[in-house]
Image 1 (cartoon, one colour):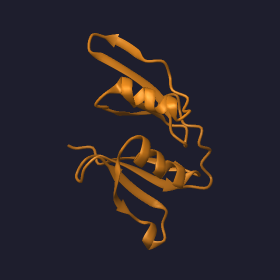
Image 2 (cartoon, rainbow, N blue to C red; image 1 turned 90 degrees about the vertical axis):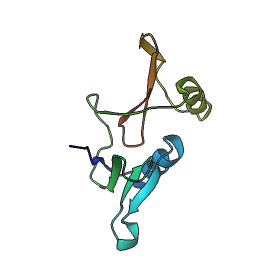
Image 3 (cartoon, rainbow, N blue to C red; image 1 turned 135 degrees about the vertical axis):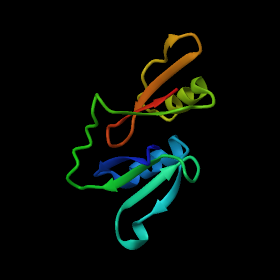
Image 4 (cartoon, rainbow, N blue to C red; image 1 turned 30 degrees about the vertical axis):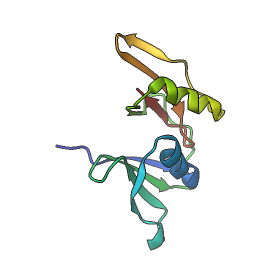
Length: 116
């Protein structure tokens, strides 16, 4: 069984779309906005697991300490430097074992996004 998508409901819809396009590097695979629904599916390439964003004005956008979405970065050190240069609040780099480095940043809905 393959995971289809992860859903994030947010009151900061357009900011979320920009975050996942510009910061994470995903592209919109399916856009429901032309049909009158603020909902998009983004992925690295067609057929991959998607991040589904849905506009929900009632969302509190505080995220959850228990939720995170992880993305493999080609160069995690460079990615962290890029986000710091953009003024984003990133965690320190963590190295839990040989060959593994990662850090977190919050998206506009408060979801923890991990780059590893």
